[in-house]
Amino acid sequence: MSLTPFLDLRHIEKSFRVRGKQLPAVRDVSLSIREGESLGLVGESGSGKSTLGRCAIGLTAPDAGSVRLLGEELVGRSRRDLRPIWRHMQMVFQDAGAALHPRMTVGRNVIDPLVARRLVSRREGWEIARQLLEQVGLHADQAEAFPFELSGGQQQRVMIARALAVEPKLLICDEAVSALDVSVQAQMMDLFIRLKQERNLSYLFISHNLPTVGQIADRIAVMYLGQIVEVGTTQRMFQNPYHPYSKALFASVLPIPANVSARRELRALPGEMPSPFDLPRGCPFHTRCPVAVDRCRDVRPQLRAIDVDHQVACHLA
Image 1 (cartoon, rainbow, N blue to C red):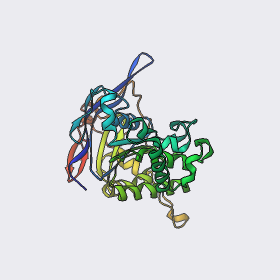
Image 2 (image 1 turned 180 degrees about the horizontal axis):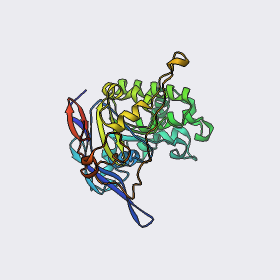
Image 3 (image 1 turned 90 degrees about the vertical axis):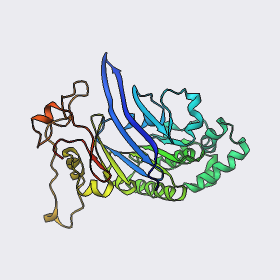
Image 4 (image 1 turned 180 degrees about the vertical axis):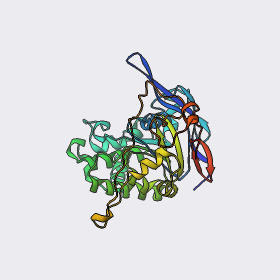
């Protein structure tokens, strides 16, 4: 794994106008993904994970900040200028049924990015589509089917095949397995891991499912109310996270007990997540934090290194 950042996000800010008010979705987020690395992005619903992923690939323009792919700045470019760059990174969406064109066959859906860029003829693309479908665990003759004729898991495999058609180096997976049955999730994770090894892929794997992220991620970033509160290696994050929110988040993953007496109690965080329309001063987590002090209520902590390859935004860490 290279130590050079393949994708580098710096000070990303993004707000939306909702009901006449500004809704801050991403607040001063900096992240990097190395070549061949899988970075898991986790947090509660509404924390800004998907918005950050869309800013990273250019589907949503950030209000401020920098997005660099292989050292090349993407922010401020037109979609036309971004097209050749998008070949290096692709997105796998949560709802494959909505992302696939319902009136196109599976094969047409897969080769559409290649034909649109005039990289291959339709005849050449059809053979590529059949090969890609086999690579993601489908039958080549399913290229003739329509998306609605496939199961949810098969549709997601088609989405992956389409993303791979342009031979990207980075896949941004936004809740790519969350809508699938548990048994199908396991099959899809095996597929993601195999493709990473075969193609030396990098991943930004966005999910609220911590065990799933733990299977594929080399590092994990925890997001809360639009901010990154902690980043560390997967092993460290599961064994000994530093931020109080990270501790509560990873403690919510309960192991299957050997017997009734070995059951562990699930302890819920006190209070509710503050409204993003009215964010608290200081640390955004201080209203729910069991160890907050006066400084936490007044001063917003910055993400800082506390160990090799580990950063945390907490005054008390």
